[in-house]
Amino acid sequence: MERKLKDGRVVELREVKVTDATLLLQYFERVNLESKFLIREPGEFTFTVNDERKFIRRAIKSKNEHVAVAFLDDELIGSIGFRSGHLRRITHRASLGMSVLKKYNNLGLGSIMMEYIIKTTENMGKLKMELEVRAENINAIHLYKKFGFDIEGTIKKGFFVDNEYVDLLIMGKWL
Ligand SMILES: CC(C)(COP(=O)(O)OP(=O)(O)OC[C@H]1O[C@@H](n2cnc3c(N)ncnc32)[C@H](O)[C@@H]1OP(=O)(O)O)[C@@H](O)C(=O)NCCC(=O)NCCS
Image (cartoon, rainbow, N blue to C red; front, side, top):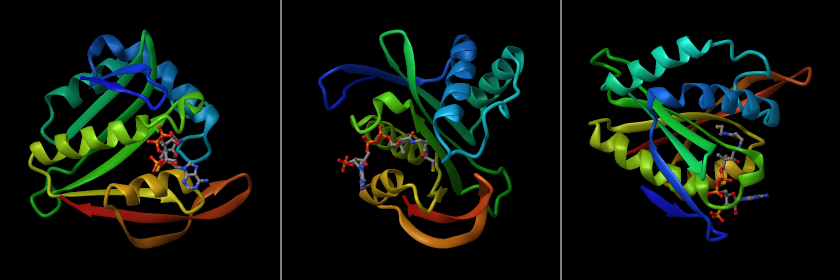
């Protein structure tokens, strides 16, 4: 689907395809360099293109996973996805992850992708969305609250970043 950013440019947001593997790897390497709010340090994303293709194939087939990518012309500029367990006691819970390239932050792409993933997660039969976010990640927390996520708890000293332990918030939204 096509959506407009706040500056009028049009992005295409769609489910990931196997042919996105190389671009997606380059994208993850870049966002991991740009942001200390994500779980991986630069260089910790060690998938080969073949691994990435397998990961995408599995995600496309799975009832418990969905990955979407946002393109501005030919540039992959954002990604969002969820994953949930298959066990009956927990399969209603979808764990969310998202990112946008730094130079495209605050243009509304995060919100566009969030709207999409909420609908998709709901359509795939999940009942709850959950995520963990660094307590200092003001923009992300603002975005999550805007879409109805509540703070459910704190994982104290959940990340080790720049030689210190920092807290993570657990946020959730009942669909
Ligand atoms: C979090 C992230 C995905 C948001 O993407 P985005 O495209 O910038 O999102 P949007 O533009 O839709 O929304 C950003 C919001 O933050 C708000 N914001 C910006 N600076 C802010 C500040 N200092 N205080 C509070 N809110 C702020 C913006 O106003 C906007 O809200 P609005 O839509 O109500 O105006 C993006 O910043 C990102 O990829 N960060 C690095 C990776 C990351 O943190 N991922 C999430 C891990 S849990």
